[in-house]
Length: 178
Image (cartoon, rainbow, N blue to C red; front, side):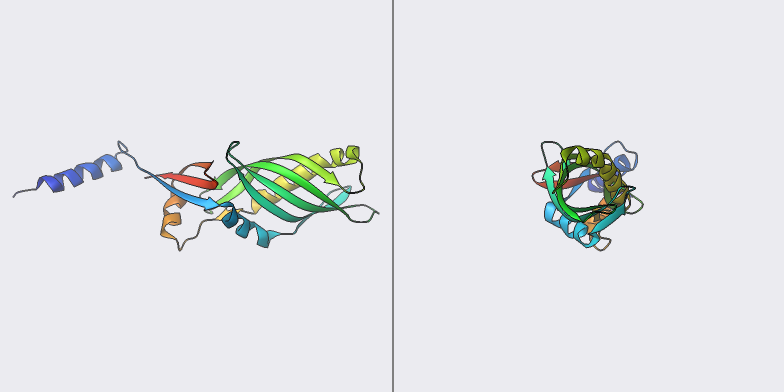
């Protein structure tokens, strides 16, 4: 029985892949607009803190390539106990983690870099910043910023074997290894 060189070559490549001696990377990229479209339906997010209720009304997503993080510019409403609601703004930066069981990306290790509330002193907003940071980390730990689409073959490939996540050329890039 004759076996052609071509079949032997295909078989050898297949064996190398199966044994891990050879691997291939595959990438799927998501724009800030795609991530924004997944975040918007989750807003507003309200959290009760012991001194105030804080509501994240809007969150505008940016991809920070130089820091390999996401930036979020947000509009918030803060209502201290017995006080009127006050409007505020914040800016935070966050890393991204991936949960393979859910096929979803989540914010992690958020840090508030700017934070102000109209009519509230800088010292009080400084005291509220750790509470707000804690609240946002809790909320976004369970609310994905993007969930892979099971109907998209490219995204199905990424779901099981994600190697890394990075921000490159204005996109969140998920790299998988085959």
